[in-house]
Image (cartoon, rainbow, N blue to C red; front, side, top):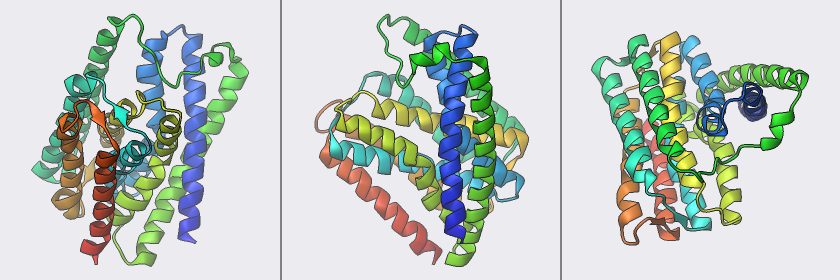
Length: 317
């Protein structure tokens, strides 16, 4: 029965996330916010809402392993699973902004998170606030840089939402909010039950099954884009998602409810895997062919992710 709760929770999170994104974008248009700002802030925050609700619900329930595992596992899955499969389908061209701004920010946040957790086995409210502040600074820099590029394209921004009525926006917000609330409740409950039935810790379930589930929307979007040969989209979106997962999801969660490290494997294994997956992207995009992620590199990423999954369960046993 636990797997049913997990699946239902994931479905509601996907549905709620989609309604929240659409309503947030439509509402932003109502307030005459520029497309650039909407694409880089509103959409990014809205798409992080499912992960935020899951981590917050888990922290409030006293399941910090799920709060941390959800984000750490999702960041690993975004690179190992999603990027690996996408590159296998179609080689990806890498933009220079990746290693000039996005990758350094992802790497910095990953390392800082490790030391924050290692220093006292807790991510407290002040540290959560610092993570959020770093995200705001990053977004300001990103928007200023983008404004200097006149022909920048904002991805995944449905311009038809400019004519959405206030009534429809309200309905979408209500549906999205309700779906996210119940989806997070059911997913956290199901993950706890699944851990008990499988005889493993909540941390294992969260960094593997829960993380894969919350990465399904990114996987679907990236695979569709790769099949359509839209090479520019996948890497930037995935790195942006990883940055938001650490800075906004864990940052906001910790500001509301401090997150403790209950399982030593989070620092001894999972965090190191997350940092390694983030770091390895730099040599991969420069060697042997510069600024390209080909099928061989995609295979290496996917194989590494499968090894991570195996070890997560094996070490637990």
